[in-house]
Length: 153
Image 1 (cartoon, rainbow, N blue to C red):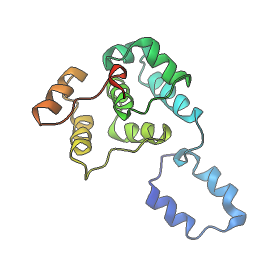
Image 2: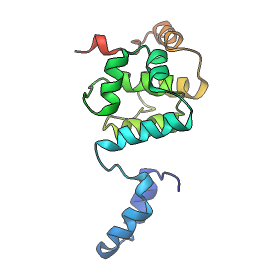
Image 3: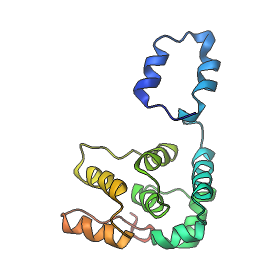
């Protein structure tokens, strides 16, 4: 089953009765944000599907391995959406997969009306190179580069 967007779910809810709530949840479980472990499960599932190790992803994301492992095991949380974006980009996630990862981590998804977010949406679609290349493009276009764990507030 594929993930439905929020508008589709809202349309279904418009004609769903309270007694059918459990059925609604069962039918739409791939589209629901369930709990804190969902991010971990989702990320590990995609890494496995893409035949990537966590170590490979952290190296490509230019994130310290120890920190990355703690993020993906739930030991640490970050407030920096850029860290999650780095991991998703390094893991070769599609834009759709990245948006879902951000939702699962309970962070704002990329928003087309925000210039930097719009640029990142294009980056996820076009895949212009490494994280270093992406940061160079961001700087070239007058935007902040993707932060690493070491630059957090």
